[in-house]
Length: 253
Length: 200
Image 1 (cartoon, rainbow over the protein chains, first blue to last red):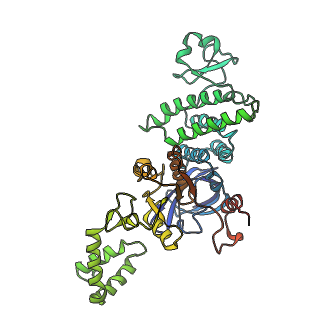
Image 2: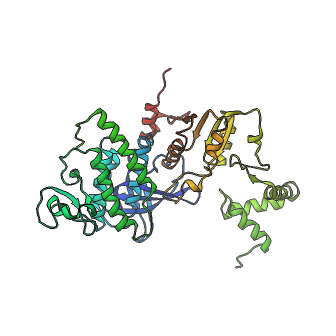
Image 3: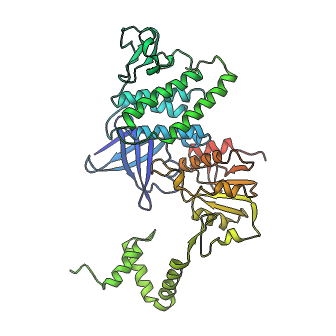
C-alpha cells in the first residue's frame, strides 16, 4: 500500500532513539500517522516541526499498519511562527483541534481552511477572525455545525444577531427580544464575510465558539479547553486593539 | 538449539546494558563481553562508580541540575556571575554550554518543555522557584531553550512570567550554524537568519 499527498504536521512523538511518529493532516486522507525513520536526526529536526507543510509519501505492507513516511518540506512555517507568542499559541491550538478529528477520515474543506489559518497566524490583523471562522468550520465538520443562515423562529435572514445555545441556530433581533439574556451574541462577520471585524465582534465570536466547543467537543471527552486557546485569544484581541488604534476602519477581508 | 548461551547473571547484564541509549542487544552483548574480559580494570571500577552514583547523586534544590552535593558545584561557585541566569531545558543542555565555555553565569534547568501533545504543563516543569531566583540580584535571564515549537512556547511562557520584573530577558539567536552551507539549509532557518542578521 502506498500513497502521496500534501500534509500539515500536527504532531511529532519520539519513537526509540532515532525515529519519530509523525501525525499529518493531509488533504485527501485527513489525520494520518506514520513512522519517520531517522526522524530525530539533525537533518530531519527542522522539518519535523508543527505547522510545516510537507509532501508525504506513505507506504506499508497492509493498509491498517502504521506505515512509514518519507517527507519532504513544501512550506517551512514553524520558524516564522516561533517569533511571536500569539502565533505559537495559535499554532498549538490549531494542531490540537486537528488532532481531535477522526483518523484516516478525509476532511478536504477543513484541510483547506487549516492551511489558510496556518498561513496567516503571523498576521495580527486577520489571525483572530480566521481562527474564529475555523472553529465554526471545525464544529461543522465534526457534526456540530451552527445554522446561521436564517432565524430559527421567523425564518428571516435579516438582523441575525443572536444564537440559541440550545439548538445552535441563529435568532433575529425581533424574536430574540424576550430571551436576550439567555442567547449568545452573533457577530456579523461570522455570517457575512464583507463585514469588517471589530474588537467587540471578535470577543463575541470567540465566546460563541468557546461555548459550543466546550459543550460538544471537550465536555463529552471530560477535558477542559486547552490553555493554548485562551493564550491565543487574549493575544489576538490585544493585537486587534493595537491595530484598530492605528488603522481604525480597516476591513481585514 | 538453546536460546541461552550463558548463565542468567550474564544474560541479565546484557539485558540491562541493552537498555542504555545507543546500545542494542548485539552491542550490549559485545559490551558485556568486554567488561567481563577486563574485569579488574573496567568492571570493578564501573560497578563501584555506579554504586556511588546511585547513592550520592541528587538534584540541586536551587537550579534543578544533578550533582553529588546540594546545592550543586555551579550554584556554590562564587566566581560565577550571579547577575546572569541561563535557563536550559535539560542537564545535557547545561553540560553542552559548560563544554563550550560561553557563559559564566548560573543556570536554571527546567527538566523539559511545555508540550500539549505530551500533556506537559507549567506545573510539570521546574518553574516554581524561578521568579524567586530572578528577584535575587539577577539582571539578565538568557533563555537557552531549543529552537523547536515546544521550546519557543516555553520561552514565551517564561518571558510572560518575568514581565513584571526589572530583569532583561534575552534568547539565543537562530540562524546559520558554523560550517553550514546555505544551499543545504531549510527555508525556516534561512528566513530566521535573514531576519536576525547583524551589521558588520
